[in-house]
Every structure is written in structure tokens, then in C-alpha cells.
Image (tube, rainbow, N blue to C red; front, side, top):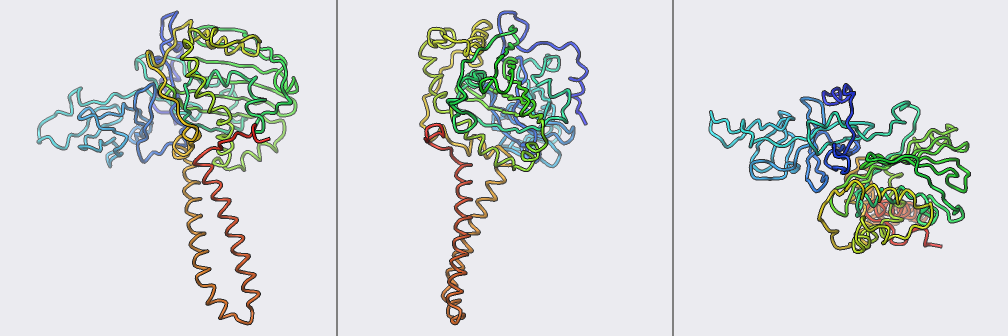
Length: 465
């Protein structure tokens, strides 16, 4: 059942383009951004997120059956509301003094005031509430003028709207240590895949000339085509769409695999940090691949997808700092040497940034570069935010502890068991050895999973041999 905001959005026919009304400037505030997959949000407690350097709190308004997004500051003493709770009345309660707010941001109670006073009715007691909507499983928020929110186009993949039940979709997300625009530029560049992702999703043997062509371009983004397509033309044409300022996707149809989309949202958190939402919708020509996908635990697929993300995470983090030192996007043609059509999308993207003066963090500089260990950190950038991974991690840690307790107890009682079964000492030792080997093997497998949910590999697969 749709909430009021979604109903209003559906009824809006005259959609405004994102980016505001100025023809030569794209205002990054006047656009919708995804914050979370809805399936990863917890309706019982508030969740924090930072969008465009603005701290936000996400919470479930059970009285109106909708997600709310507030500025993460209580108007009283500026405490973080995300550290509070959703109280018995269904209001968001500040952890500092118990002020509580309903879904529209109005203060409902100030516990410290004397009876008869009505300070909660003041506009100064209100929290700024941002427009929200759920589309294609993602919670979107609009940080700009709220009066324009539901007449502004929401960046969704229209292809999926036409036949949603026909697609099998793999979803992942991660907070990345580089800019949203660096992420989009990287995903637009298909020519890096055979080299950067060799051993994961690429192969150097598939390298060939890449002839990209722009088919249309304007303030709202651009479209392009790769006539030959990946793997030396074996998979067919690939179409690419960039919908400003946050969405891009590749669309590929092949006889071998059916239709495949590579969808990426890049939500800007702060200068040098963004949240990636990656979606891989498939329409397979056979039912077997879809069966394997449906049987694969989400947390397990996320481990593999994090490995792929880390193939280029290190050098992208440094690349954007080198570009800044070379003059930034405005001087990209001097900083980058782009002699082939393989860079047509990168060129068009940088041209779009410059032509429409797109700058989410004006005048800000990148923070100092991080060390490799921090760049490969997975626990805080993904695991704790993912409902599937956080639950699996907790279960794995608990299973590891139980195994150690069982092994410890077993070997403590082993001498007594040996005496008691004196005539079957060889059998006892064999059983003990078998239990130890099996338990130790399971413990090592679980430890490997635990480590992969905490930290990525220092050496990428392309450099292993």
C-alpha cells in the first residue's frame, strides 16, 4: 500500500527535471538521492546517514506507515536524534532531554516544561523533515526545496518498471572512500574491466579496441552506445545511460545470457566519500542461473562483490586527489590524456560537470589520503549497515565461540574418557582426532568468512599470478 507521499508523486504528471531551473547550472540540492535499500532498514530504531555533508536520521513513522528523514539535530541543544529511540507513542525521541517529534517534524512533548506552557508549538521546536519516497526497493530523499520534491523526476530505471516480475536482481551497497563523481566516472568506463578486474569479473584476454559513441546529451545526462560490445563483440551491443546527478546503467542483451543491466547509484556523503548502490538485474535465457542466484545467501554474494569493488578502490582514492592537484575537473583535458574513443563517456561526463557547474561540495578540498588498510575496511563501510551481513557475522562469531568451547571441554574430559574406555583406547583417540579435525576445519572456514566481512585483501586477484 502506497503512503500519501507516493500517491502524490504518482499523480504528478508534469515532472520537473532534476537540477533546478537554471539552464547553465545543475543544482545538486534539487534532486532525489537513494539513502538505503528498504530491506536493510530497521523499523524499530533510527538510522543515521550523511548526505551532501548534512547529517540525517531515518526512522519509521508507524502512525503513518512511512519512512521519515529528519536533520539529525534536536532543535533544543543540537543532540543527534539518531542516538535516540522511537518511543511508545511512535514519535522520534531525543536521547538528551526526551523531546519527541511526530512524522511531520513537529515537537509533541517537552518533558521539562510546567503544565500549561506550550513551547512545543513554536516553530523553533520543529525539526526539518525532508521529503521521502520508496521506489524500486530504495528509500529516496530530496534535500532541496520541499515544494518542488514531488514534481521532480525520481531517478529510477524505467526498464524495470515495465515488467518488474521478469527480472532477477542482485543488490549490494557500500560506503566508498572516494567521490560520487569518481565512482560514476569509473563505472562509465567499461574499458578498464579486463585489466582492473582480471581474475574477478574480467580477463585480460578480452582486451580489444573500444569504440564508444554519444547518442544524446543535455543537462539531465547523456546516452551512449558501444556497437561491438564487451568480450570482443561476443555479447552484443551495450547501451549506456547517465541520469544526472546520481544514476548510470549499462544495458546488454546477448544470446548466451539474455538481458543484463549494470545499475549504479552514487550518493554523495561528503568530499571524498559516497555510498554505492549496485544493482544487477538479469533476464536469463535459461532458468538455471536464476535458480543459483536465488539459492545463494545475500551475505555470501556481498563478500564476492566487495572483492570486486576493492579491485580499483585503492587507486581511485588517490586518482581524484591527483586530479585536484592538477586543477580539478575544469582542467581534466590537461590532467588526463584521452586519445581513444574508449574514453568518450569519461570525456562527456567531465564536460557535463564543467558545462553545468556541478559541484556538490563547493570550495572543499579532499581530506588527506588514507592508508591501504583503512581503504580496504569492510565492517563499518558495509557489514554493520547490511541486515543480511550483520546477522550472518553475528551468527558466525557465535558459532566460532561455541566451537572453541566444545573443543576445550572435549579435551578437558579426554583423559577421563581414555581411562574409562581403557580397552578401546585406539577407538577413543581416533574419534577424538576426527572431531578435532572436523571442528578445526569448520572453525577455520568460519574465521575466513569473519575476516572477509571485516577486511579486504591487500593484494588484488589481478596481481596474484
